[in-house]
Image 1: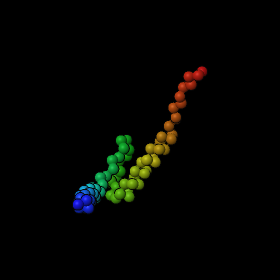
Image 2: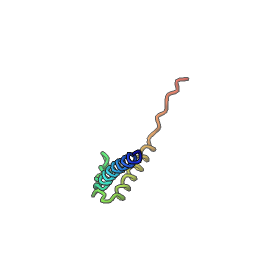
Image 3: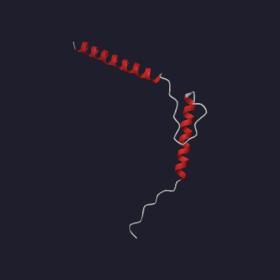
Image 4: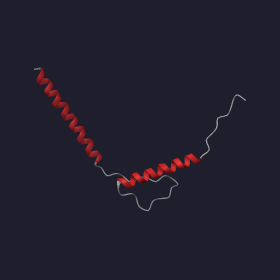
Length: 82
């Protein structure tokens, strides 16, 4: 009797995992929307068509943001001891 309950429980868990996997796979097959440009940035002539192009665009945006942040002066805390 214990083995029957164990087997039924295993089948139920397997069915739940299968449904979740199916749902997750259907979400990942959805088309990737085009990236939005940052405000003040020049609009691109055409949105990237592939995931690779979108990845390169994101990498370029992050690189530009980091370079901009590195150019800013770091705020110095005031010295209260003096």
